[in-house]
Length: 278
Picture 1 (cartoon, rainbow, N blue to C red):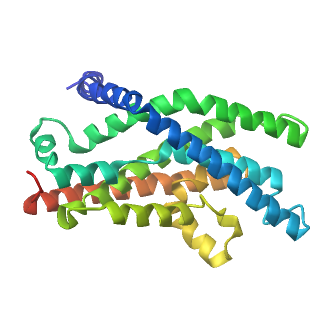
Picture 2: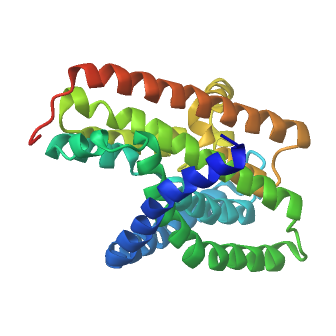
Picture 3: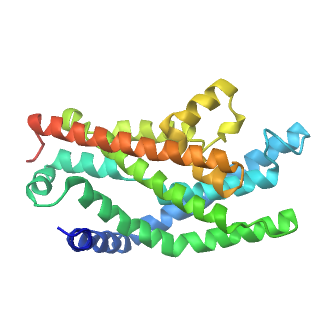
């Protein structure tokens, strides 16, 4: 089949899942609002904690960060997490637990693609409502704090590329985690533990630059920095051109690894599938 026709057929098959994702997000808009407000409160709490740290240190620069840099880091990190976080582990785990996974598996559609395009619908709504106001607010803050325009189109486009790859990595990693429900049946507690650990090792709580050199270098090569730290550092201009290319290559590599792992786990699990309620 011609590539154009194949792409058109693929999109015609899965775009309805995207529309369903948008409708689901709008139906549960109170959850969306609560999540957003919670993220803002978290940013404000972290801002005052870091302000106290910088004031106590008596040094305007810590590990390459000023307080203004840390403020930008906090809000862009929250935005990036908001856009790249995936519910794949929760959705897959719940469908396995209640038996709905059986209906999804017998449909003539790709297992991964149905979840992916449904989540894209939710992400498009978040992007449309949240992204522009937050980025605009951050850039206004940077203009006032640094005394000039520091926004660069090239860093912004590279940030968007890196953030897209962050989401794909997050999706396939969470799908891999969700497949554990084939064997454990319920992942509620494990999801809480996973989220807490990932928030720390991805640099979402403390920038990796503040960690001991050995740990920092290990985490930069492990997949976790791809979730948040890499795109945020690109946005802030903390990486040189060569470092950006390296970090993007690392992100892409981990996407491929976790995609292949997810396919392997799915094919293995289906040979022993047993679902509650199915």
